[in-house]
Image (cartoon, rainbow, N blue to C red):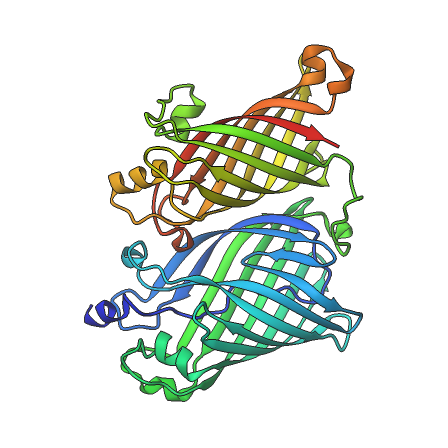
Length: 431
């Protein structure tokens, strides 16, 4: 393990993330879960690492969220497009080290896209890490549909600057020149039934030949695969981006909550303990309606970004949290209107909160700012409850604000188990 001990403080593996969105018809929304397998190119006893990876998809005319990439189209017409984007880059080393060593990041890039034909595209991308080390891609891709199967092959050239290679492949121990590598990949999506799809991806990357001389690398060939499933609109509903007038029922939700050291199971069972320091949060969420049915069932689905303010206390300074999630509601009447909701998404907190830090300290983990997000809610319609018709669009309810890391299965969440929980009370106004 001597080679690994040298790379731990320094290295970051730059592998392309799951496929970038092409020119094919894309769904306006979606959510997916799968397993990502990636080769480890260094001289370690373990050759491969696996991550459970949740993915979200949301697309408007100018903004998109596509799995592990988000971007804004700065300019576009029928044949050309310029996009400012951020893409997640994994750090692939053996699982046992991933909590201690986390150099993964969202890198920023600029992409020019030319579309010579409706289902083909050429990309030129330039990206940079947080310290200004640059790399880029020149990519050709196309889309083909055969019945229920969609196929998206890509071929690309990968350019990396000298300082990028010296840092991430020479590990600051050896100087490396700029290099030109290549990647070939294919993404598959199969429509099973209604909103259910199977998803898969495979790609082979090769580093430039000069990097093969680096003693820090065991191989310059890397294979990455992904297998999973997702929920998207049915195929005939693809092609059109989300529009603000697509459905009625936008909402704004204001909530205030109190931290608890109890886990989710105890909380939902009605058996939780109070945080002795009284740590609290206040959040505001915006709900953008996506559809009012899933698998033919009457479910209201929303894309819901949120901003959370964690108040100061005697054990923590104030901090902020950002959330992106997709939430489903089931509505029923008995004898007034009720709704049960479940959300899945991503949460990023600027500074680790006290209630989360003590959980990590107790279990011996290094905390992670990026975590999986869950929200479980139960609410009643205030118009029905108070018999005031002017309040028909206002809901009062309880929600559980939960950050977690999928039980040590995800390196992007720090390969940890546990997180934080807040019991919150909310008011939700639909318009």
